[in-house]
Image (cartoon, protein in one colour):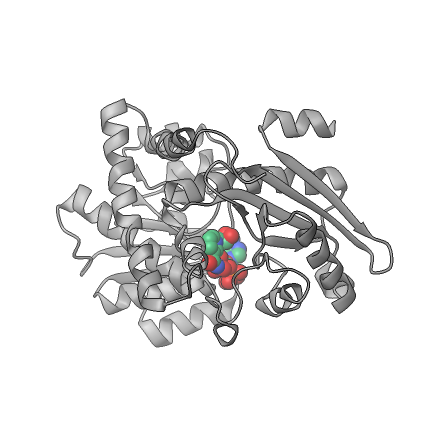
Length: 352
Ligand code: NAD
C-alpha cells in the first residue's frame, strides 16, 4: 500500500513512523483530524502480521476516534497509535519510554491512553517522558480504568432505546443478550441486574460466564447460540465485526447496542439490520463512555462529573435517532452526519 495514498484516502492529517533501534520499538501514530482539539486515542501494542496491517489498523482506528469524540460532544480530535510486536515478549521499560518520547515529539497534537496490549502502568512510565498521556491511575490524579464508564454509557443508550421503542426508560423485565462478559460486558451485566433486567450471556472464557451466573443470575448460552437468543436488546461486547450477513439473519432482538468497536463487518450490514426491522444504536456513540471519562481529566478528575458527562450519551443517541428520522437515513449514517456536523462547524485543523 502506498503510504500517501493510504493517508489521502481516509483524509488523515499526519502519520508519524517512529523507531528506536535499541529497544526494538516500531510505532505508527496516526492523527486523523484535529478540528475539534488535540487527537486523543489509545496505543495498541499488537503482533501485526506485517507493517501494512498495522498501518491499515491505525488509520481505521484513528478515524473512528474522530467520529467518537465528535459525537460525544468533546473538544477532542481523533488519533491512535500502534506498536508493532508481541507485548508478551517485546515489552520493556526502555521501549515504553522510547515510545513516550515519540509521543512527546508531537508536542501535544496527539494525546495517548491505554488500549489493547497496553496498561495504565505503561501510561505511568510514558508520563515520565511526556505530559501528553491520559488514563493514568486514580492515585496519580487520573481517571483509572475506563471500562465502568463505558458500561455506564451503554446503559444510557439502553434508556434512549427504551424511550424510542417502549416509551419508557425502565429496563426492569427487559431481556438483554450480552456477547462477551469481559471488563465492560461484566459491568454492564451488573448494572442491568441492578435495574431488574434479565441477562443472557456468552463468552469464550468459561470462568467469566460462571461469574455472571453465580453473581448476577445470568443464563448462559454458547458463543454461537447468542445470536439466536430471543431478547429485547442484543449487546455486542466482545470483538468487532460480529454483525454480518449470517449473524444478522439469525438475530431475534428488537434493538442492538453494545460496547464493541466496529460492530458491523461491512458498512452495508446496516441495510440488513434495517431490513430486519431492528433498531441499531451506532457503536461509536454508544461506547464513548471511556473516552468521555478520560476527557473528564481536564481541569481535575471528578468521578461524579465524569458520570454526568457519560450519561449525556443518552441525549446524543436521541439526537442521532431524530437525525435519522429527519434526514431519512439509517442510524449509522445519521451518527456519522451528527459527528461530521460538529467537525465541519469547527472549520479546519486547529491543533497543528
Ligand atoms: P475484554 O477483553 O475485557 O473483554 C472481551 C470479552 O469478550 C472477553 O471476556 C473474551 O473472552 C470475550 N470474547 C472474545 N471472543 C468472544 C466471542 N466470540 N464470543 C463471546 N465472547 C467473546 O475487553 P473490554 O475492555 O470489555 O472491551 C470489549 C469491547 O469493547 C472491545 O471490542 C473493545 O474494543 C470495546 N471497547 C472497550 C472500552 C473499554 O472501556 N474497555 C471502550 C470502548 C470500546
